[in-house]
Each structure stands twice: as structure tokens, then as C-alpha cells.
Image 1 (spheres, rainbow, N blue to C red):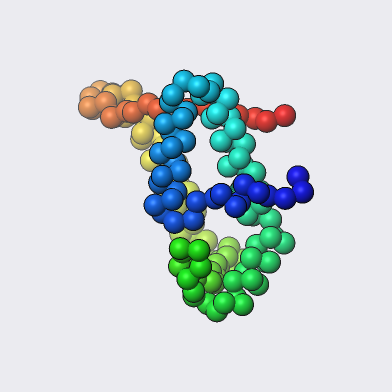
Image 2 (image 1 turned 45 degrees about the horizontal axis):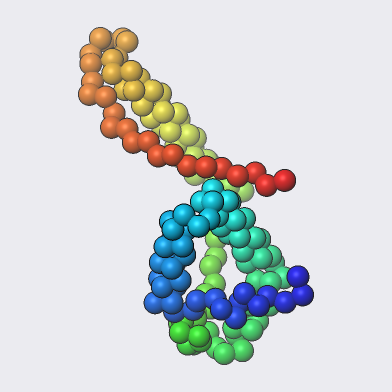
Length: 147
């Protein structure tokens, strides 16, 4: 692929995005295309876009280009803001109180899971007490593993 001509027709504004999506949905539901094939293509495109956007070199170049315009600016019907996020990793601080709290969190999480498993049966085996069953919802979805 020598050029990305598809970018020339990419929707920029929210209105263009909504119009593009509505048009795509209409075409998908029209019966012209195999909806499974279209869904697979959409998934492949989303994965490809994610690979491009997560590439460190691409991210670095995008930030450098953006900074030429300042920290915040308008471009192509969008407000662009360059932000910085700092994250902290406290696990190596050697604080026994913090480490104890993390252990308590793990213990509580395990206790909650065990309690949920018991509640799913509707009966406490130790006391015989009964409970309302948990509300459940089911959603169907597909996964794709591309070769």
C-alpha cells in the first residue's frame, strides 16, 4: 500500500461521522453484502487502526506535529489538545501499610467471588438460608482470530 487515499474521504466532524455510520449501517442491512464478512472486515480495520495508532513512532510523530500548533488548537473540525498523563507505580515503595492494604484487597476480592458463587446457587449451604437469584443478562458476540 503506497498511499492511504481512504484518509481523503475520512469523516472528521461528528456530523460527518454520524452520517457516514448511518450510511454504512443502511448498506450493511440492505442485504447486498454478507453481514458476517462485513463484520469481520470492520474488526480487521479496527485492529489495524489500533496497531497504527499505538505504534510508538507514529504517536511520537503525531505529538511532535501537534505541538507545532501549540498545546490546544482547532484543526479539521476538531479541538485538539496535547495532554500529559503521569502514572505512579507504588509497588516498589516498600511501604508495609500499602502492601498490607493490597493484600486485604486481594483477600476481599476473593471473598466477594466466593460469596457471588454461593449466591448464584440461591442457597447458603452452611445455614440453608435462601436468596433471590442474581439478575442475569446474556449478550452474544463473535470473536475473530485472523490468520
